[in-house]
Image (tube, rainbow, N blue to C red; front, side, top):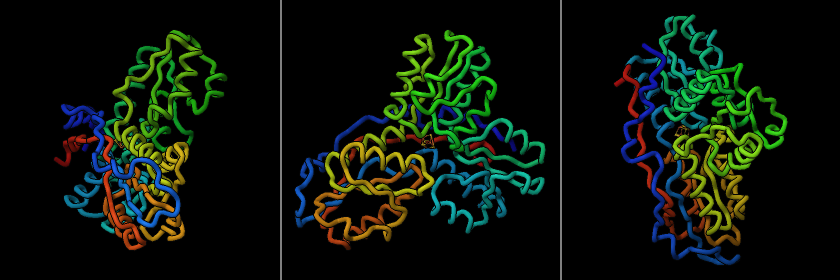
Length: 347
Ligand code: SF4
């Protein structure tokens, strides 16, 4: 089995485009504008799109299919996606999650997580004679390929992202002697660059256009000849979920975001909702809701990070209804039709 399937970079869906069209759902009309405190009737306004993105569905499907086909144990480097519910379910089926490949017996099946890995991890897996199946999201692979292209063309590469995030570590490993991580405008000011005419930029996929704008603007001001990422490089799912949560924040007094505390994109949805004026809370399960949160709230917004299963969202809607919410409405800000073809080893 091969560890690389960059052919998936194009994905099965691309005909529809990775950037969904925005489409306002007319059902959102009646709750436009924040409802005054003390309103008795409560509405749940559920964001669409929400939850699983194509990359997460792809990675989970790969683990399930490999377990179906080969049986346990199947080793997975890192949590396949940052969601405890998903990881626990797969662990129950016989998946073993590890960050330390030295603990994986030679000859075992090893799946790389959706976040991607650096070439050194691929080499380590190969040296240990592991049979690799790659569940790296094709949009992450696309960033890796861009970094390699820049390196081949003798560019220095700036990576906009969060230090220590597993995806960023994988990206930085693709040209370690040519890459610098920039998290803030201060980082941009401190950069030492060999040739300002040969700089390329790539970004962590779980950052949206808005997230990267400030740092990217600072880079462009300091280095006017920089090669910036194409709009195609921005992950459609990250952008769409943030657009939706902004709308929720505008219409709701309380926004609940479902996701694990380790999920970068779910935490970011909470931040975006707060920035846009709502009280926002991250919850993992329906039971995390304290009924007092709903006091004096007329419209409760609900969304979910890209690694949160829809079953958890539905359970939360049921819980909100049991706590006195008497209508559930959709707020649709985009349509998504993206899917990725599975690696050839398991088709
Ligand atoms: S958030 Fe985007 S880049 Fe990350 S796994 Fe999902 S589709 Fe891929």
